[in-house]
Length: 322
Image 1: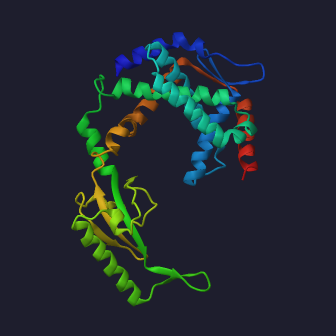
Image 2: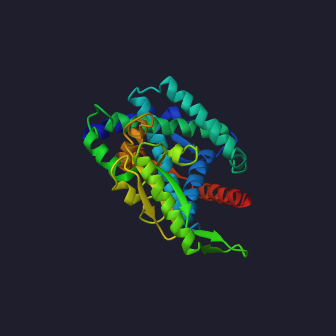
């Protein structure tokens, strides 16, 4: 990686390009010559706080979350600077995707961002930086790169991490007059099992999922095996099934008619469509560590009082919207 680090360290010469702070914004962090204003830090702190919220993390651990947000700022500076230093360019499609992503994000969270002191312009700058990071990922680890992730490694990861399938489900429970979930009578359970076995036989004989599902189409599902949205062990069991072989799976409360699909075939080729994501899964942490280390090499100065003030405002804005 010496060659990479050498290129990165040269990028410090371009840091002045990131120095843009309006009179209304305060600099909370300096990375080399680049100034991170309160809006950018607020965005990244909010991102860290949201991740802690969704994962059940300690929302009072503001020092830890602040450190994570600072690292995201270092990654932001290094990504944008290195992208320019290497003379990489965003394609027309990438620019279009950035614009679309910003519009969608602002439509969903714009009012909250406004309360938290984050402008649409800042969202656009950060979205562009994230796309620069993706291009750096492909530059270092993509096809034909010096540190290319080989196809067999990506495919091995994909086959053991994700599964695609079609499924029809039924329930072994019903709701009583008190609104409580109770088991079906034994006779109804037996009848339901017989129905699903008949549907399985119909699929094996060549009928489609829509035909055995009373004319209703059945969309395919593509999902990580580790996803907890389904009963425990359900997805792992599908991952061991043969392709296109209909199987009935029973749990305590559900019955499923399932056929595993080859996620690398057909119009929904999830392997090709999301290939960059799999490279991110395999090498993203390495890239992040490299970019954060590069940001640290530039030199970091923190305005701790301002950082705490911004963090407090973000938490307040989030709590006000609950």
